[in-house]
Amino acid sequence: MSSRSRLPSGVLVSALLRRVNDAGGIATMLARGDAQAGAILIVTLDRGVMPRLLERGIGPDGKTALVPAGPIDSTPGEITDYWRKRRQRDPDLWVIELDIPAAERFAAETILAD
Image 1 (cartoon, rainbow, N blue to C red):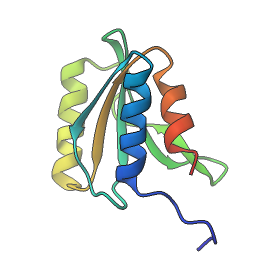
Image 2 (image 1 turned 120 degrees about the vertical axis):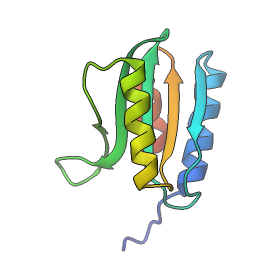
Image 3 (image 1 turned 30 degrees about the vertical axis):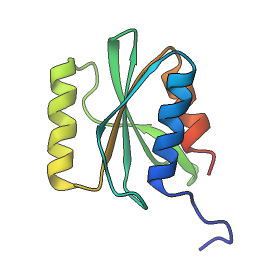
């Protein structure tokens, strides 16, 4: 374990929601996960279109990264079905929806900073 501990998931999610809303976007918590160590799944939108799923995980370099998750080129219904099935298997999973241009940048700057 490193000498620097990771911030709890609940703190990271709260900061992300606040940042996006303060910047004029819409950030919504679709499902609350474990406050300490729950995985974070992010549904990104740009003006309500082009849904994309990203998850905080481990990138190819071994560092924390946002990695693509779930079905690609999906409808909003398919995305919802995907995260609901994930929540059935992992009730600690956070599901956050961000509707703002450059949603991935907001998420990376906020939840990968730890």
